[in-house]
Amino acid sequence: MRRITTIGFDADDTLWHNERFFRMTQEHFASLLVDYTDRESLMARLLAAERRNLGQYGFGIKGFVLSMIETAIEVTEERVPASVIAELLAAGQEMLRHPIELLPHVEETIEALAPTHRLVLITKGDLLDQERKLAQSGLGDSFDAIEIVSEKNPEVYARIFARHGEGAEAALMAGNSIRSDVVAPILAGGWGVHVPHGLEWEIEQAEVPIHHARFRALSHLGELPDLIGWIDGS
Image (cartoon, rainbow, N blue to C red):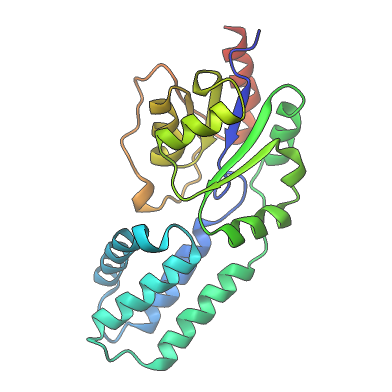
C-alpha cells in the first residue's frame, strides 16, 4: 500500500518560468524612474506596496502592475508622466502575453507519476492568467484536478487533499516556494518538497524546516519519482 496517494504540483517556477519576467519588468520600471529615485529605494517601496496590496489585488501580474503604478505615483510625488503609466500598463500586457516555457524534467516527471498517483495542480494567482498558462503548457490533461486558489495555507491544503485523496497525511506537495509549497503543506500534515528555481519573490521566503521529518529538498524536479518511490517503500 502506498504511503503517498496524491501529489500536488506548484505551477509558476516549478513547471514553467515565471519570476524572471517579473524581474525583467522591474528593471524596466527602475529605468523609467531613474530620474526620481535610486533602484534600491524604488524596489523596497515596490515590495512594500505589493505586501500592502495582496489583500486587495491578490497574487499575479495585474496586482503587480497596479503596485508599480502606485509606487511610481509615490516616488514622483504625484508627478509621474502619463507616458510612464502607459509604459507600465504595456509591460503588464506583455507579461500576460508571454509564451510559456516549461522547466527541465517537467514532462518526464509527470509522465512517470501519473499512472500510479493522483496528480493535482495547485497554484495561486489571477484565474484568467493561470488558466492561460496551463492551456499553453499542454499539461492540463496530465492532472486529475486543477486548483487555482487565492492563497496557499494549511487550511487550503487540508481541504484540497481531502477533496482529491485520502487527506494530507497521504499527500505530498512539490514547489519552489518555501512558504507556500513547503511549510504550508507540512503544517497541514503532508509532505513538503522544495524544488529550487533560483529566483524567489521576497514575499515567498520563509525559514526552511530542515529538521522536519516530512521535509525534503531536491536538486530538480526529475528527482521526485525516486523520492516518492522511497517514501512509498519505506
